[in-house]
Amino acid sequence: MDDVVSGIFTRKPGEGARQGPLYISLRRDIERAIAQGILKPGDALPAERELAAMADVSRVTVRRAVQDLVATGLLVQRHGSGTFVAPHIERVEQPLSVLTSFTEDMARRGMAADSLWLDRGIYAPSPDEMVVLGLSAEESVSRVSRVRLANGTPLAIERATLSAQILPEPAKVGDSLYAALAKVGNRPVRAIQRISAALLDDGDAALLGVPPGSPSLNIERISYLSSGRVVEYTRSRYRADAYDFVAELRLREPESTGRTS
Image 1 (cartoon, rainbow, N blue to C red):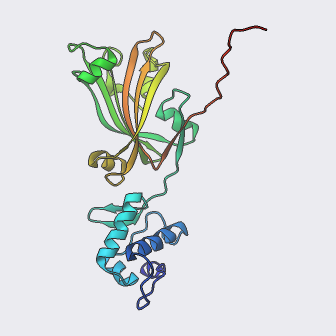
Image 2 (cartoon, rainbow, N blue to C red; image 1 turned 90 degrees about the vertical axis):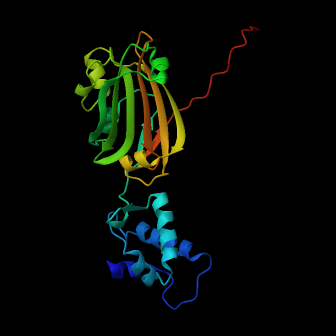
């Protein structure tokens, strides 16, 4: 592997300095090697000292180039193990016009959906939960939180809150929350979603397997029953490098003036 890596650099030892900062040249060399398949997903990079010697640059230059590539998601660093080429992530397109669950979305794409459970319990509601769900302080809420995976890759963190009357046994929720709600006649029929961009904090980044500060798409969903009652309040964080939300737009029909000739 060291022979392969040493062959990717455009500046050989003893040659004059290239134009521009050395860390940018080194970063481009590594980017090119990944794009051409010389470095493959899962491959380990040599240690910082070895990489500096191969590229004939300082360790500070290597560190800067690697940090840039970690920030863009091309490389990942594992504490105590080293630096690796990040696994290839197949982007997922999610339409915004249909109310479906993560499990249903992945099934349509032939992908296996799975969950890493973070919480399934009953709690006193927070002020935000009381307002959104229309609950009193004496009532309880069920919280269902998990990391959602597709073919083993973490894509999103979902934190759903429902009235405990709607979902009295959150511990029994399986692959699909909506399937569990359908069994008790409480599956939502419509929802309002708000999407915003943000950067992942250390905790959520670790759950999604990306560097802290990586971009995410935050989704706040409020879902309703046919009666108009709010049934679900979910806050999700999706990996921006793996998820695209797609909306179909149609030209608005001209309004009639009501006049006749």
